[in-house]
Amino acid sequence: MSSRGFFLVLEGIEGAGKTTQARLLSRWMAERRIAHCIGREPGGTRVGEAIRDILLDAPGTEIPAETELLLLLAARAAFVHDVVRPALMRGDVMIADRFELSSLAYQGCGRGLDPDAVRALNAFATGAVRPDLTLVLDLPVAAGLARQNRAGKARDRIEGEGEVWLERVREAYRTLADGDDRVRLIDASASEADVGRAIRKTVEDALPESFFRRRG
Image (cartoon, rainbow, N blue to C red):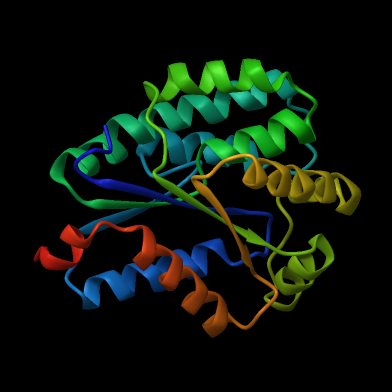
């Protein structure tokens, strides 16, 4: 599905700066008139945002691991159908804040679900659509939570699992990045500007030249 467009995903633990860097990357592409769109997970569609409210905005709510995964995949199926596929079919760059690696890191390793089952269910939900490039913004958990505290952001249900659990998720991301040539680790402990430059350099190297010749 991404043979015409280019599917780019930003991943990482809470506080790593995914949302900020996705916005900055979108601005950079707009300045170069690269046709693109941006979305987040879970969310990006009406049903996805409703599921997001259930999953994240209900601190203390007990949700079984299997239910959590299936809710996320339901949101992802809508996101792919309504946002990702149309963008790729138009030949655009699709920038997503989270996608399949989140399920493997959070629900696979974090929740202890069978990673092969997670992959199989994800493939069904997405119609086997996969990112062309995933950038994992790597940051120690304590640093990410400190950033959120400084910004006055309340912890959601996932973040409320605690530092030990989130460190397991971070290590899962690092392991997943090491085993996939379409995944790159970005040091997110640097300044916002330096992280942005590292992201842009990686994207420039990976994005086909034809995207820089197009006019969106």
